[in-house]
Image (cartoon, rainbow, N blue to C red; front, top):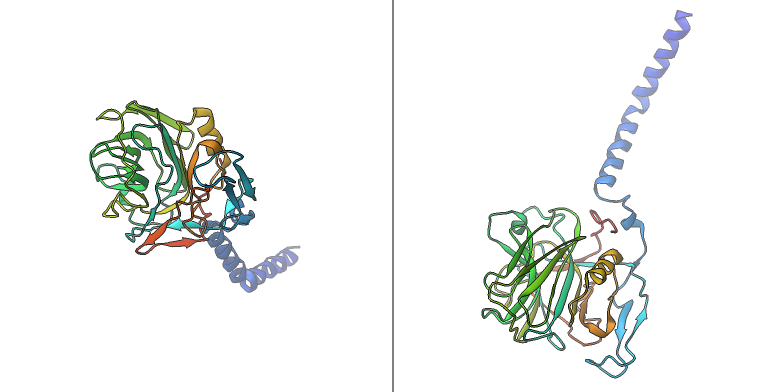
Length: 301
């Protein structure tokens, strides 16, 4: 009896000696694939190419009569996103149709710091801005910039703006943006499913339509975004909280929620074209790239 047991133990030991290394290697490979997000559902989901969904304005840019969508407009994931990675790269876009003066507006974007080892704008106290999108001039109260300041979402209308306490996690993808009520100083900032309302320190906006930048402060002179950007949408109205929730729940590939109020839409799915039908296509400056390896850390809302 003890002899048979000893033989079984010996056989098991020989098996482990023979196949143990192979099992260990397989375990290491599987762990690495999990870490890279290979088994993330977003990695395996179908993805659409640039322009698969776009807005059609039969009467030309700036018009809304019979406006509609064309293509695959069902909130599918993008194939690419734009990665700026502190390379001082940015995109200059047009300003046609953007709400100027103190007109109502809403700006939203998907952002991610994942994969960046020196993210300055996610550290409280270092006074570094990362701008996702902005337009206007560099003069006080003439700008409308969406970004992250000391780790929190900010709507920058001047040198102070309204920095919220909505902390953007340094990993994963997150939905940020703001809405502004016409002729007031009130702005509401959003981060994923959270919101915070406050006042601009210098009162109502007076935005001058001079320039429009993705991934940098106005002028392309600094505060470069550190990480990846996708699906930037601009509206000429202050979206309701329900409309913002709807846009967030559509995910990173979400289609616009109010076509008649949409004035610019840069999915950044492989190019910097404006798919709102208003032809505010972007021109790339310096170095940045579009990447298809973006799904790690992304979970649908």
